[in-house]
Image 1 (cartoon, one colour):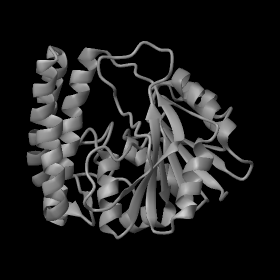
Image 2: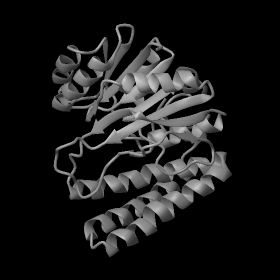
Image 3: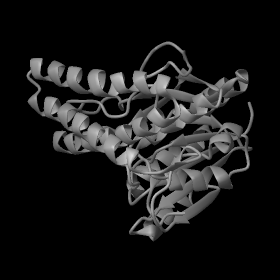
Image 4: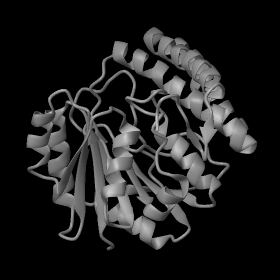
Amino acid sequence: MPAVTVVVPTRDRPDRLERCLASVRSALQDSDELIVVDSASVDGEAVRAVAARFADAVLRQDRSGVGLARNAGWRAGRHDIVLFTDDDVVVTDQWVVALASAVEAHPDTGFVTGRIEAPPGLPFPRREVALKRDPQPQVFDRSSVGNLGHSASLAVRRVSLEAVGGFDEALGAGGHFRSAPEADLFDRILAAGWLGRYEPTALAYHEQWRDTAQIVELDFGYGVGNGARLAKLVRADRFRARRAAQDALWDWGVAAAVQEWRRNERPLAKAALYRLAGTVSGFVRGLATPVDHGHFRLAGRP
């Protein structure tokens, strides 16, 4: 198996970070490297104390933003395959091997997403957040929309990251547009001529720690980021933009709200409507934001 770089961004969650890093470390070979990037934690010393026990390198970013942190991590790494996960995720022993092997086996593939489940044996929330549990492998191209996977369980070929300039730092937690960094990355990698894949044997567990009120707030942010991503697509790839807009506005918006209402899940119907409103807001704001080489350019930001 080829050696890999694993990047874990984190911000002020040392307890969750410790569980994450312990699981990643146990899945690595001696030739692999683990890089933790502190995304402007208030208590940076607490984060560093945990990260230093497991990581080969600990980086600090004084400006928050998950895209900024991920870009700093992969650029500091030395291997041709880069894996990403988040500090509220625990990976299984075969996670690294499964993702790296899938990338190596398919030279036409720019990225591979992994299977993400809720931790077994824990109370289940009213709605899942950032899971992908399809049982069969999948192949993605420019026509593929919906849930392609998440940066909580992701492998990317370094050359494809370099070709598209990595993550758009305006997207995602801590960014100007609060989500959708991986969907936007997938859009640009697919547009550059690569395929994507989903590998269900690359299993990780994402903590479901948000309550319903937090999910409603999160969903508005999901909408904002996805709307901004759509604003990019209408300028760069009208074919994909039409398919992604139907998925965002109808499947993940109106239809989802109606479904939750019929299930008598009023808070989740509200969350879907908030997500729809966020999508419209993010789209309008995204159209007003310049794009340079596929990345948003914000005033006052490099």
